[in-house]
Each structure stands twice: as structure tokens, then as C-alpha cells.
Image 1 (cartoon, one colour):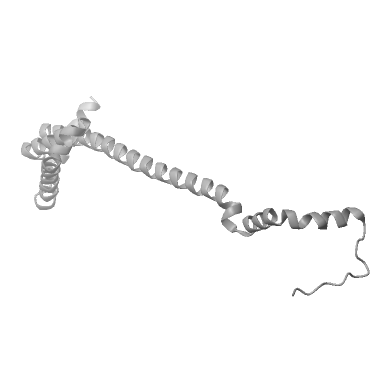
Image 2: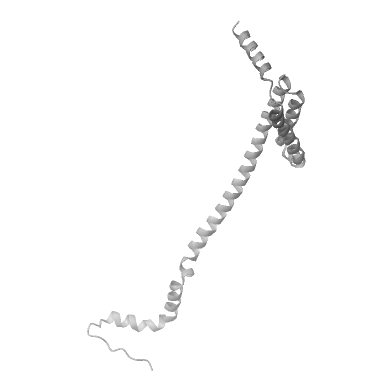
Length: 168
């Protein structure tokens, strides 16, 4: 048996209030469903949360893919410029008389290898050879400078001759 609540002195005895409470039992299942949905965190916030969370995940994935693709493209462009630099350096070393011409040829071949990155499918197939030739050229040049160096006396003679020819 349910305990009955005694009306208090400040109870509202108007007809509209009595009618509202009289219709309450008929609407009770609908009100219970509404209350259950409002009390549920996911029932109220799920559409907004899912939209925001899904949008952010898609945006983050797209941004990550874009960053990786841009990184690869910029890396390829850098390889091409590095190839141009190495090719020109190899040519200058070949033309100079301070270093062996073989170093210039080796650098130029390495530069041509780096320029193969202009055609991506070929560069992927030949990548190990390109890196190998470029690395050999760089290591041989560095070792040459460390061990043999440049003939400083000849360098000064040519620099003085070039300066004298400019001022004539």
C-alpha cells in the first residue's frame, strides 16, 4: 500500500491544477520515456557529439594525409634542386685545376642521378643506385679535402693573376 501524502496548507486548489494532475496518469508512459531520454547522456548529446567527433577525425585524417603528401612532394623538389647543385658543382670541379677531374665527373654523375627524381617511377626503381653513387661522390670528395686538400700556393698564384687581369 502506498503512503498517501496529505495536502499542505499552501496547496494550489485551482481547477486547472486539478485537471493537470488528473490527466497525468494517462500521459505517464510518454513522460517516463521523455525523462529516460533526457537523463541519458547519449540520448541528448550523441548527435552533436558524433557529428563533431566524426568531423574532427575526418579533418585530422585529411590533414595528416595532406601533410605527408606535401612532405613527399617538397622532398622530391629538394632532390631535384640538390641534383642541379651537385651537377653544377661537378662541372666546376671538372673545369678547375685544383681538384682531380675524376671528382668532378663523380659529382656530375651523382647530380644526374638526383635529377632522375624528375621522373618519379624511374627514381623509385633506381633509388638505391642513385643514393649509392651520390654517397660515393660525396664521401670521396670529403676524403680528398681531408687528406690531400687544395694546393694553396697554386690557389694564391691564380687568384693574384685573376685580380691583376681585372685591373688592367
